[in-house]
Image (cartoon, rainbow, N blue to C red; front, top):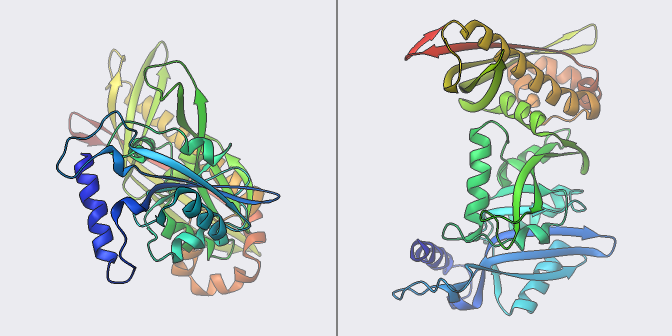
Length: 375
């Protein structure tokens, strides 16, 4: 697998060879992850880049060497800190293969400026993930996972799995830049937390878990979202996505998968108050259960699913809209599409309208049994 990674990275370099100076592969710091921390004195950029000494083109992979190494640089800006990384590592930084940008807890302000370095960099990757940690980004990058053909592959897999379970709404760089150009300049990033444990499943006693989200709006960090609230964001913004839930029914339990999730919003204006009606629907199937008779329990299970979906979505809307007037659901697009005239009436005071909005959430679940959907 490492040979495949080397081939891809080499192809990236060759593709760009017409517009950038020729550089030997071992002279490049080909970034896998970028960590950004900030304090009162400036920025620290931590780069986790592919270790070209850990494998060869036709020779066997040297498994004794780590698949990633890190380098740090400091400066007044992210760009200056990246230059310092080049000096400290002795390599030219290339961001074209970067899969993830991690913001430390002190670096989530002025996100548009801090992301522009990657969006405009001649080797930037607009599809890389944008994430947050409630600690230091450098600490996250110092965990060099040995699974996969690159260290970042483990984190990507964890994030995709969390999204498939409906616990996380992933965010890519191009999406982040688009959301930051909207009226409330709002987005939510998945939040990672470093933890220490003595286990075979950790890297030198350290690992990472997803613990919610970071809400940023108006060019600053505003609040943290819980895992349940992030799941609510997922329910409201996914299209055809999935979400796993577990419920207790008496002394028994059932684990179900919601799939084909769809959310529709109907906006309106009533006596100057913005009204937002959200209709969320999903199909449901059993994943595992200890229920004696799953068929007889399906009405109760459907009720529990709908209650939990409503609770998660309502919590996410309350945290973002009511508390901060932050549009992290792409509502401005939907309002404009539904009624350009309505948008013209509220555009000038959009954030205040969101804070005072009359919100209603309705959910509908259809439970599948033996391949048949019962409404």
